[in-house]
Length: 496
Ligand code: AHR
Image 1 (cartoon, rainbow, N blue to C red):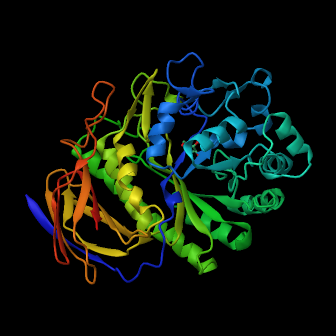
Image 2: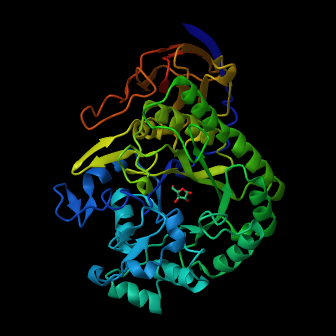
Image 3: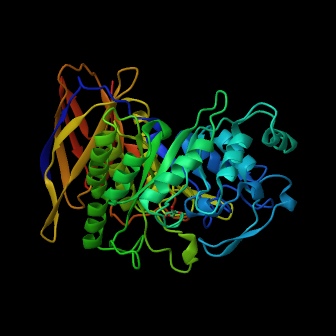
């Protein structure tokens, strides 16, 4: 069955740029993301630089990841950066109390992370320790990273083999300070932020973009208190964390691979909630910052399911299905449509943890359906947003209804239009009629990511079960565009 919808593009209202930093990623010292993900055993038979796995680096370079957040997450507020510098054999070991109670040998530290960023061609986003650290510790880390004159920290950095400052720019002042980052009230955190941020200095040519730890999902009071109590000039961004939990219950989140349509519907509903969340947090920010100087930074998002059976519950290893790709594509459409306030975001987490782009098994690796979404959405990075309105038929289940189709659009510097559309309905193809008034495009091309079932996954035995294919379901006649979106699909259209 096919049902029709319409799409109107406000092509004369392209004042907002979709920051490429919306397409950022996150890698925590958690499970097999850093260790056995990016940073592997010296004996592993894969291409490596030092212990950094280069096949993974190559895959991520192809999708031009713009920034990488590190070292946590909850881990950030128990990480002491001095433990991760100097001769590796001399680095102290610690217990990673948050994530599986495993031994952290600190072999991957500041130098290794920044080497990884340089290989990836991506910007580092470092989260400093507020929960169990000190103002001095954070201040010295910034000095170690960014100062260029003669100082105790630059001397130490040079002794450790790095002459030039790295000039790290994105700087998180704590993480989830309402929870694992210290169980603080927003009033207390706001004061702490002011103290920590004061001594996280801007060095020559290395101004920091400081990001305050933001709300847990719908905790609007957190955003209100932070915006009220931290002067705007002290804060480049304010974060927001929101995970899509299939069942909505933290103690039993639901399987990554075995779920029925009712659970699928519920998951998509929880995912679409991101639009309301951003709208409401942004409205609070507008009260204190009508010029929208402070960015909303959604620096943890994605689907969080139960772990794969038989794996360490503290490692958060989950498979990645077509459902996850639909979540990624829908969420990125939401971010694009809110690009006036959302200027950075980080999917949790890049390899082997939560909604990953890459899964590894020994020396083998595979690209998940979610990876391909980031591939298809690349044209939006730093392009001008085209606001849109969509009239879509509903996707109904159990007496509830969701919009079946969502979309976002942008125009790049060469005038090329990119539209990304998602049809979340498992039963119905959808035809969307779009008019492109005043635009003279001659041809439309594109790609589609789809599959037979929302539970489809890529496995080490069948790595390309969910992979993009050329899309032929769009017709352009003058200024009229007709697109037929297959059921359960993500479609990227490029108009020249
Ligand atoms: O991404 C996993 C965890 O989720 C992070 O460490 C924490 O910030 C959040 O609660």
